[in-house]
Length: 260
Image (tube, rainbow, N blue to C red):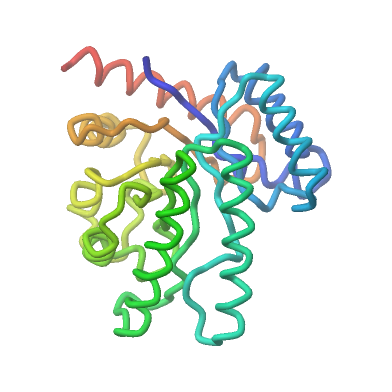
């Protein structure tokens, strides 16, 4: 059975206008789209205080929902300012604990390097931090890793190098499918074996042709076990546009399964 989810950032316009809360998102996932997995962007959290985090946990339990991914902004491993790096690290530790409490499957903590080339210092700090985070994640039943956001993480060779060096079962890649600065033709193929959460977005993948089906076949062949997640970036008609993209991805996964 294939599991699907919708990144909560897909509803950022509704959230920013005050028309959706995190709890409204969870309600939509469960009752509008009939899904049991959430893909939560931390920008929707109103607080990280204990009572609020527990209220989310209680809702997840009551609705029998699973957090496929918790995507964290503001906890990047690298920053040029060591003081900011330290603050980011403390935020990462906070969200690692929130991930533990919520029983998430994957947690996104970005690299924060805004150039494709990494210095030795940047590389070493990223490897050491991810080793630390991956140990905690593995000890508590989830996985952690960067997403293909900033420039260094949009080089599949960089991600491959870091994955091999970290070499821990609690570490993997949160992938925006087909979002590469270099090696775009082979990027997804390179990282597919260690992708722990795959997110499809029509800004990067053609949903109208054969590309979506080919990408799903690629990840199935690589043994991908996570949810098929989708994100809509348009910022208008979000309920309907998300429903359309979710249907398209469902159909592609069904076709890929039948062709095996």
